[in-house]
Image 1 (cartoon, rainbow, N blue to C red):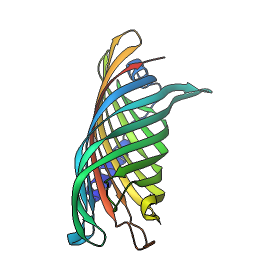
Image 2 (cartoon, helix red, strand yellow; image 1 turned 180 degrees about the vertical axis):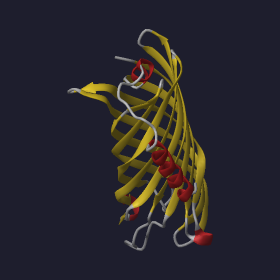
Image 3 (tube, rainbow, N blue to C red; image 1 turned 180 degrees about the horizontal axis):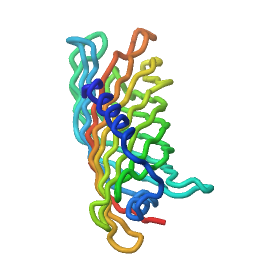
Length: 267
């Protein structure tokens, strides 16, 4: 994913808002879609690539998982259109590994991988037109990744990093029952580390970046019950580590394409 284009798009979105009259009070359909408890099933395709020249490792394949979200858009202590959300994503499964053991023996296998991500968002919504809402937000969270490629080269590696950043979400009322959404987010990954206990290896990462774009749809089926669907792309880098006990983690890049389908209960 081209980071320059991503940030240019985000800046253009913010710039376009300068000339648009903003007001409070989200449309009832948008407030309903953004307020409640949602649980969904997810399907993902992940591609991981180390940047180490001819000795680079790569991994790719499909993962299954689930998502959970607790969110609210409404008045808090007299302040209108306050947006708050707690998001959790889990995915796991077997993906293909094609790489090398250090110091450079070819190695191909299936990698048992698990991903977790927790994110908190806090923002302020503004109505930009009848039935349209824009929500700038700040975010923070945590991600980890466990992989097991077997053999003496890696009987289990653990990756983790904190996240801090922000983004913007756009909601549009397509009908009284259907709300469409789009969002873009950029975060910094900080305090990251990797460890492989079987190799007595541990390394720390520098600060790197993550970008995420997504599309969504929420349909109110009956009363407080909703169905929702989403599609998103996430890209992030790990900066690599210094050598420890004869091993090191090279710089890497990961792309995840995730779809989800689920049910939500509004309150």
